[in-house]
Image (tube, rainbow, N blue to C red; front, side):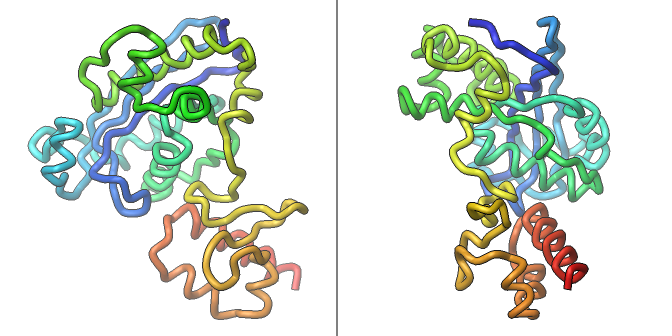
Length: 256
């Protein structure tokens, strides 16, 4: 089964300094862009994260401080990244939980206020979890009958994810063949932010997914506890989450 594309689909993978969405940084970004006519382009950037890459992390993806010392910082490539994904949908492996939230953080940090919610997201890991829970290496072996060479390099993982998704479409006849429908079936939860701190209630209003106001609407909390917004903005939340807090806070003040 081939995907029916209405607009380009960008498969991408990040290698980073760690797993903290709010504080860790990208050291490598690779993408494979598939166009509706099935032509394609691919590119990989090495990025200076402006922070130390822990040795334990370097052992996983093989990228050290010396490897990226002379590379551009993310702010220098942010506009190119924005141009690459503008008007596209995104696909990855466990990307809904990690790569997309971290990319959103890096873009905001670089002053690029790109609305990733305009994109549809396909997560091949979500499909794999539902059918054959494993790692990407095992998924590649299971679906494609190949061993994943250079696992944890952004380019190898990106191309493997593309092949895995293609194989999943062939293997599971119940999977839809459009980006819109695949995005719906691989998105397990609907959140207003990418870190899962802000959800929606049945009326589509933003609600807290944590803390003493869990389950309550942000707008109602900001009206009755005026100091809570200030605490949220000064606390250790990802920048995109704070952006949503601010949006709701400003809208609430304007209405009241």
